[in-house]
Image 1 (cartoon, rainbow, N blue to C red):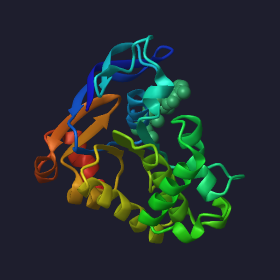
Image 2: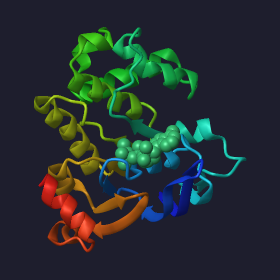
Image 3: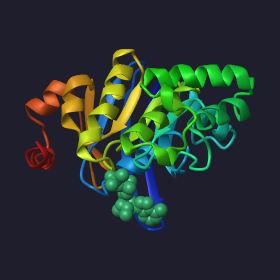
Image 4: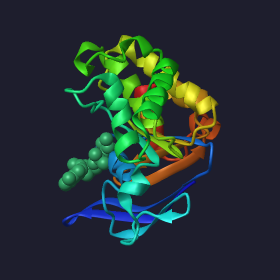
Length: 240
Ligand code: ADP
Ligand code: MG
């Protein structure tokens, strides 16, 4: 579903990604971890074309992300992205947040978009809040809305960038629960997160990044059993 081959990226003379290579199969859940500044967000943004890269190739369901001929907004519509800060439109009701892109980007009729939005709100346990504004919801609820909004687009894969790191501790699990459910339904997921309980429960593989490189790309049990690199061992010893 997602193939990342020898991807390098520079900000001016600073190399932020160095020859990153990995593949994510359909239905696979990959957790990406590593120290702050190691390039996790940059890599995940490259995957759906939010950031350009200067070398290598990324294929998304057969389409080359870096190809100048690729219609990036069309491609992005097919990949769900959930950020640390929920980025809902604050001046729009929850249901309108969920229908906007369905109508504008996918061309769905508003009735159909609304039905879909309500169905997904129900799935994340928030149907009763459809007519509220984002500011009336807790952080955990807003993040669940953000996930529902992404799912409204029938994405072929979901990308998460530290979806729980801005939340109060008591709200983390309600968001992780939704992600666990998604994973169990076979969604292809690339998740930047330091929630190692989540990784142990649902990840198929764990990628560890350091200074812009993928230094570890291992099956979950191998990663938690004994990471090969000293850097990953040290990282794990600090967060577990
Ligand atoms: P992570 O998500 O792992 O914390 P990032 O991908 O956000 O790391 O950042 C990787 C490195 O790239 C950091 O050193 C960061 O300062 C740098 N960086 C990120 N965005 C930019 C930018 N727009 N311009 C210059 N440097 C950036
Ligand atoms: Mg980041």
